[in-house]
Image (cartoon, rainbow over all chains, first blue to last red; front, top):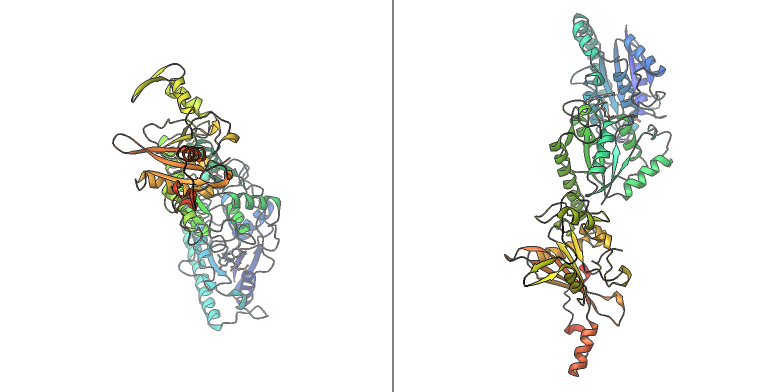
Length: 202
Length: 395
Ligand SMILES: Cc1cc2nc3c(=O)[nH]c(=O)nc-3n(C[C@H](O)[C@H](O)[C@H](O)COP(=O)(O)O)c2cc1C
Ligand SMILES: Cc1cc2nc3c(=O)[nH]c(=O)nc-3n(C[C@H](O)[C@H](O)[C@H](O)COP(=O)(O)O)c2cc1C
């Protein structure tokens, strides 16, 4: 059984992305053990002189390291990802770089038709930056448009076709995690190089 | 023109802050830039609305009152910082001060590419419907390897880079004017973008390197050019006068005379009265200023229209009557094109007169009387009067 950490990309009390992650957690319970991590308690990033991670950030990093893969679900704010998710990624890149080489799957929900697609493209570019260097599953992401209407009262996706699409992607992700982790282990030198990269000591 | 510069970083030490301070300091002749920090803005949270907090309201007010905004963005993980993102979320949630506001993006970062990716993200973010800013296209000012870009005095080391930055700022000033035209109320054609009222260019006679807005521009410029004064003789076409004689002669003219050059810089007026006593008030400290700083913004379009008439030769003189001086005066502003021997436009001679005493004298001498529409005979004012009325120096 795989162990995944899912990161909810918002600090909002009510979030359709949270409902989506809860649905994923429940729906795939027999294939993976999925924990949902809330980032709302993380302090705002401000490039502190001492590059040490605050406790909450370290906790997140430890959970990422322990997980076989990471699922990030992001809302779309102003065609990009919410500041709180950006801040989280800044902490990770600036301190422990826990996302390096970690297999990542992206999902997102938005109120409009496009289902946060523009936020996802920003998120991909960010995760590809040298201090993050996550292994994002290529050419697939799971997006939900009109997210306020997408779930029933039990938090189940209403659209059966959407559920099948999700199952397909999730299945791919399990394989992607296996392949990526093999590749990464076989290529430890690359990992060391990437891990040594820092903007501030260039 | 008033701009605010937003530091896109909340770090204690920020190169982007230095960059904005450099812009504010170095281009203060062109624009007035107030640099705003975002360090104290809380993390955006839609479940904890802090729109009414002092720090966000302060940003809101400053942006609303500004003619344009410069955002200096670092690059964090190929995007803008969470701190800047958070500010933009607050400013697109319950309030929208950036709506239709002209914005210029600059950025400094460690990478050689100098924030090119974050600038692209920022453009897309500013374009989102909740923000809806009007971002100046092109003119990307990217400052790469920024740790090496400034000297100890926080000036840009590379002169070419500073020069390019100046070009960008000047373009932004024009861009703001163009945006104003686009957003002017329908039906009223705004032509303020046809003239560089901020005198951002230079002509042969421009005294460079001196702050046009300085109160003592005249003293500084006179020193820089070693201008003659007092009892020194000046040879004129045709005659010989001392500077003193020339001054007294011009001061004895029955009109308030003003000279602005073809770069739209206010260079001279025959100063023989205090502002309060003049028909069109001028203060000694205004000499040297760009015309934009001598007029309220609402008349920029009218001022530009007049200058265009003269510059393009459509008219040699534009006259307008200013009726606010009461019934016993008839005050006419005449804007006369000044041309050189080759007939090139080199500036504007604005002379302001109360012609009522002359009319009275004429009537008395000839025994004639005015009948009916009366003043029509002397009012050369065209249908454009409304556009240019009020095109007087701001108090
Ligand atoms: C500041 C702000 C900006 C937003 N900008 C967008 C946007 O650009 N595109 C969009 O689809 N929804 C936007 N939204 C609306 C929703 O928050 C968004 O669709 C989100 O993905 C819903 O996710 P959630 O239910 O998990 O909070 C914005 C909301 C806020 C508060
Ligand atoms: C979390 C983090 C991520 C960064 N990512 C990038 C990057 O993707 N590209 C880049 O050129 N510099 C990057 N840098 C380095 C910044 O360019 C550098 O910190 C710069 O000084 C930021 O501008 P400021 O001094 O105005 O805060 C990063 C810095 C931090 C702290």
